[in-house]
Length: 115
Image 1 (cartoon, rainbow, N blue to C red):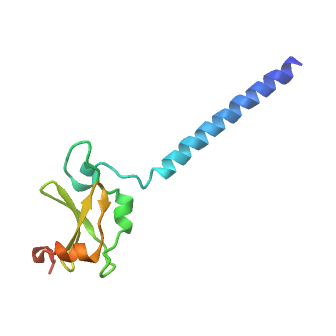
Image 2: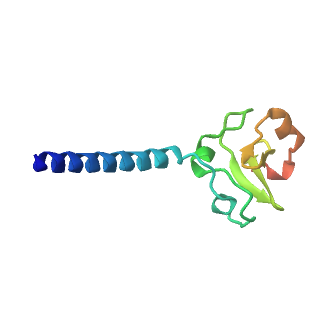
Image 3: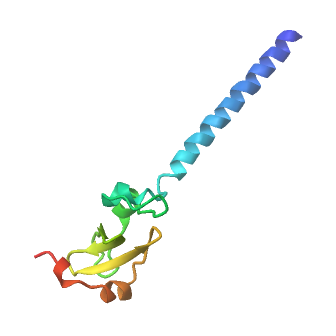
């Protein structure tokens, strides 16, 4: 009868280990699109409270006007998503891109247009 309890205890321990490993894997998968520190994407250090856009999210963001890619640019401590085809700049506030056409037109900069 002792062998039964030993096998049962061992099975419970293995089951618990499997649950822990799966929980860690799920946490890592869910964290892929979390925001990374601003210094990791913008090339600068802005302190520990400001957050930037993760590279995975940046890869799928598109300008709402022409549906083309945008790039992350840091300018005097503020982050922008820039479309170099039309000069629109979209602000990033607390790691959240404000990608409205009105915002892009409001912050349009002719110097950003690549020729």
